[in-house]
Length: 123
Image (cartoon, rainbow, N blue to C red; front, side):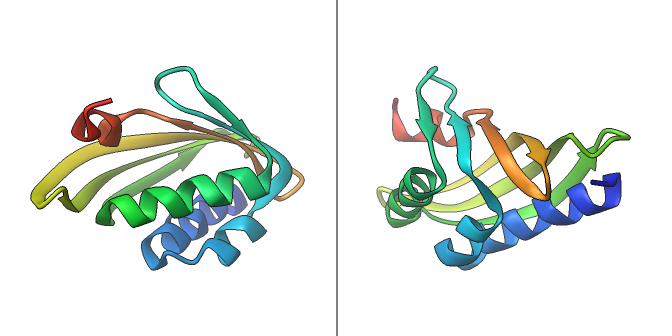
């Protein structure tokens, strides 16, 4: 994949999160995708990751904005830095956050979370 294709893929991933469209999100993931949480926990598989994001969407009413997407020359590794704005437990929040991505054959194979939301949730 090219750098441009990877950056578009990551942008589509974040757009699907903003829309809470877990079907569109799942279509961007490799079936064996890995999701690494800041606490070291790993979720494996597209369906498990889709369910994890669905649960998070139910817990946090948020929008991802101020998105900056980047990729290496090969399009294999990418990252997105952004601002999360929303409410959780009745409190408004604004957090800077980032996700790291690995891409293979046009699909996301790994997503690693930086952890801004976990701090808010008291994990």
